Length: 117
Length: 112
Image 1: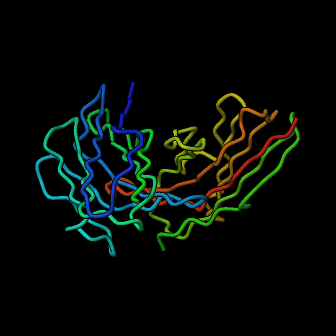
Image 2 (image 1 turned 45 degrees about the vertical axis):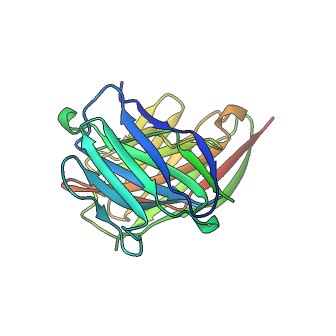
Image 3 (image 1 turned 135 degrees about the vertical axis):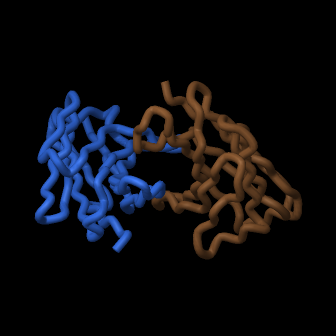
């Protein structure tokens, strides 16, 4: 149980284009999902907290107009990187909490490797 | 106060040996301490977790030792295997606070 998927697993795009990454909880309802960014050999940096049916809460220094987050259902959250540039190239990871199970742990997706040319 | 310090940054252990990774925290409100294992190109996977009301938790070859007074906790991997080679992250959070604070990570290499 508690499986989180991400799509796509990797994406290459041209500078200036927008890219959408999907995060799905497959076997549980996730009222809260999280988006992280991870640079090579570094820890995970929380970008935003996404609550179903409401606006995402962004961490300090994260541009909300550049990283659009939508959490339209209890099993799906999306991250759109708008007008992507090479510096946005990174490994993006989502996670979800199984709130109904009353557990604190987050379950992570497999990540999406974004490369902006 | 939200920081979780992790050491060492990298670790090389002989097969069959014990791998030890240490973490320390400042925020005494933290009440949940998970460890994650991450393989290259993959998302982190929950390995084992502990709450501060116990001093030790063991699951198979993995043990968390927790010292509440010192605000430290550690991961011990017994009989380390080459398949354990990965990056390990300690983390901390507290009830009602959804965010998880991650340590800086330890890259473990188990050599035959």
